[in-house]
Amino acid sequence: MAISVQKPHDKLFKTVFSDTSEAESFLRAYLPETLSAQLDWSTLQLNETSFVDEAMQESESDLLYQVQHKAISEPLLLYILFEHQSSPDKWMRFRLLKYMCRIWDETFRKNPEQDALPPILPLVFYQGEKKWSYSTEFTDLLAEPTRAWSFVPRFAHLLVDQSEISPEAVRGGLKARIMQLLMLAAFHEPIQEALALAAQLLAQVPRTGGIDFDLFFVVYLAATQQRQTVVEFVEALGDYTMSVRSGILTAAEEWKLEGELKGRVEGRVEGRVEGRVEGRVEGRAEGRVEGRLEAKIEVVESLLKIGMDWSLIELATGINQPRFQEIKRLLALMQAAQKPPTDQPPMQSTTN
Image 1: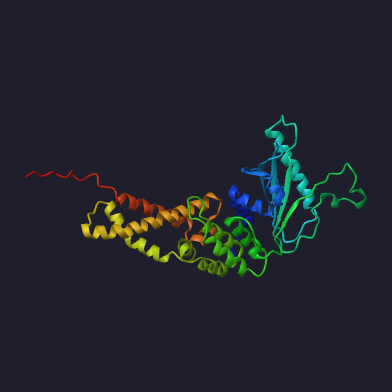
Image 2: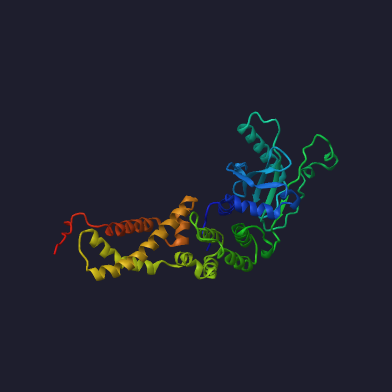
């Protein structure tokens, strides 16, 4: 059974595309080539403000970027509206017009002296269950005889409709493609091909500091799929993601080892002296456990930073809030045990 998580699609979309390199990979893949060639992608910046109506926040997400166009002095604003409703919405174009006006209002707040409105390119990213069936032209919302009138607003939005796309056709950078594939699995059947390709791509994502994307993507999957599907996905990742596998499936063996060492560590903190040989053996074992404890703490803290709640963190890592506090306490004890005692007399030197 999938667990209930608030706005999992929104979190996935915004976390991945808050990285401008991932946003660039997606936009370059789906914008017209003639336009993409006219943009200085090194200037791409993210605007943190959302413009979506409060009533639509369960089914829409948005991100606004600016990038310098080589032919104009003002930056071009790239507005991605992510529609994660199950079916197309005729009135989405009307909301887009409202959102664009809010964006222009924001430009005046930032630059009251501007003498021209920056152009906005709206792009709708749609992942619903049914194919998008409506026009992309705003004037098509008007009665047909009035569409050519000079005083009616007119614009068209770009559309990325992934309701019938095959997993192999998904484009962009690694994380952008994984995001799209996991969303395909969330909205469409069958899911096996999309998840298999997502696991293959996830194996190629560099393991660096910051967000643990292995766990982040697994957390999204846990919120949108049955547990057995999550387990099968984790198993497909292979040996290069053992940290995720051990976290989501079981931490029992590590907990047992921690328990065996805990008493000895607490004993040394209280001042007991261990034998040198035994101490070296235990030290190596404790070093391995200490590294795992530090890794667990780092993973949980990275998930907390991106707003994951404890029910989801527990499912993804096997660690609940009390367990997290216990891990931190044990790590502190182990680190304290490694410090040289302060109440021992200094060693006496000998002379011949």
